[in-house]
Image (cartoon, rainbow, N blue to C red; front, side, top):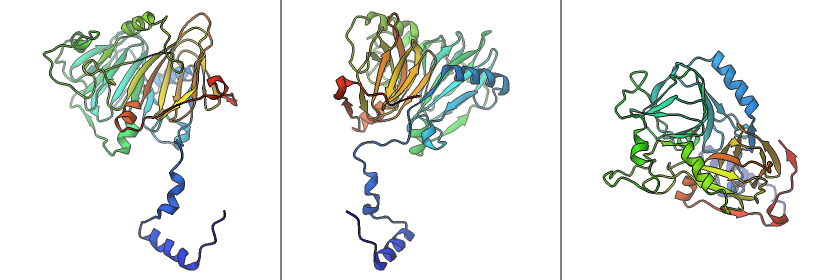
Length: 358
């Protein structure tokens, strides 16, 4: 039905109401959508483009006050500093001999090492050394710097909750007085203290919101995946493991969860959707992810963003080798607020019709 044209009295009332910085709920009803309608869009940054831009950045941009990190902006978010509505992903390069100056900030950060071995992140006076596939944490407001004492470049994916912190008006940032924070703990001290499977030291009474374990090594992650190679896993996520807080068993960070997923050779998973967004990094393998009918064909080194409530399904195109996906997700926030919801696709055997290709 078409609403009758506004009378002069109605028009006058609305103009005076708006001038007083008020709006009627009847004007805003269209924003109460039946399901999430995010502005962020599915997108993929190909490894070939990332590698070329990172290489060029090493020649064109020195490490100065800030990091040499290429921020991945979602094309649907109008130039916002955001890969999804709550998270930013980036690719950072540290050349031989470089040090990235110490600072701290309220956004929480993770580093997933893509290339290079032997560089370090120092967190509150503890050096955590890197190897490909390692996951390294930087909790909120922790002093941290990066250094590369090796002879080869080191590259990693950053993941931070910057858009969420900005939306909450809780952004704080501070440089340390010196380029690096003095070391006050043994190297990889958190691994020796907290890196024991299903065992936690009884004398440590503190229970920080972020995991006290700063390094989740690829060696242990790969071992865990291998031991589950013959387990059925999930119809929608495959053999998916969540990195967890060693003391609580919950998500390792209060605002971001980290997953690693193994897709068996030839696996074609079913489609589902959920509230909350994700960013995937392809650790190994070749495959495709269909997001709301769009096919994203991926290979090692690609990065893919998944908006909230988007239908998605993964396929491993290799019949010989497993594919591995690492992801950051904002699911802990949704769960803490009671807003997490999931829905499975039941039509067409749980698979989407492909309508376009990225």
